[in-house]
Amino acid sequence: MTGREHGWAGVGWKDWQDHGVVRWRLDRGADPEGWGGGRLLHHVARFGSPEVVAEVARRVADVDALEDGTTALWEAVLSDRPDNARALAAAGADPWRPLVGGWSPGRLGLAGPTPDLFPLPEGERGLTGAERAAAREGRRLVAALGDLYYDGTGLACVAGIDAEEAVHRLEAVHRAAAPPEDEDPDDPPNPYSDLYPYDRGELGLTVGVTTVPGGCVVTQPWGYAPQMPGVLARLSAGTVCYGLYANPKSGDQGSIVRDGTVEGSDLHPGGAPDPDATSEEVLASYLYRHNAVAYSCAFVGLRPADARAVTGPPDLWVELPQRDHWNL
Image (cartoon, one colour):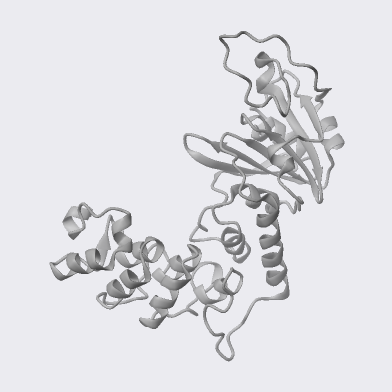
């Protein structure tokens, strides 16, 4: 169904924050149940104002109706919209209904920035000790990495080995920074000269490697080399890697390689949990929502103190050998 068929044609993103616009549409027959092929209440829970959420909630048949296995209240919590979540609860939505991975919106909220969002009912299970520890580390890690720009970056987060061991496994050659060579005045300037004055023809196989608590990070701020399958396979011997490429065209792409075996590919770190996600996966998706780098680090247990391992300068610059890195 389209917005036009539901009576919402022409409504822009800012309009979902305008109670008057939405109420005017509803009073003239716009469908309170549907928008853009999904449920309107789920949409405004993510993008609307609390007043809009309350307006739509009082007009739907069921404030706890499901879309892809979740309620509008779940979407408000997952999207960090506490005021919208409160509006939905006031309209009768159930904060403690188990949904994805056994988590309810209320329990999930206990791990977030507003743990007092809903009063914990008597007999309702709060967070376990392990979940509280994961939430604390999640807040620390997100703050430590900060608001970094990583579009176009490739990463391999590796558990349990340091930078020198990673270089050994990759059979890479150490490179020292040297004075920049004379550049063609017609050639665009090197955007990474403050990190490494590379020869432009060698860009593709040059990567940085940095030891961090819990393991190491292999990075390439300008390309995908660290998450090529052959690179991850060598790094993952006896351990686990999470590879990330922040593709400027198609978004964040993740992969998991454990002891040379690919366990997952074309993943979406930092995105919403899948409908069949485990309890641990749901919590990680919530803690690191919209933060693919933090998710990748946390997946393998890395605990960097800052963003240097990602943005540079790294501990070591190395050059990968000439081989087919796309095959294991």
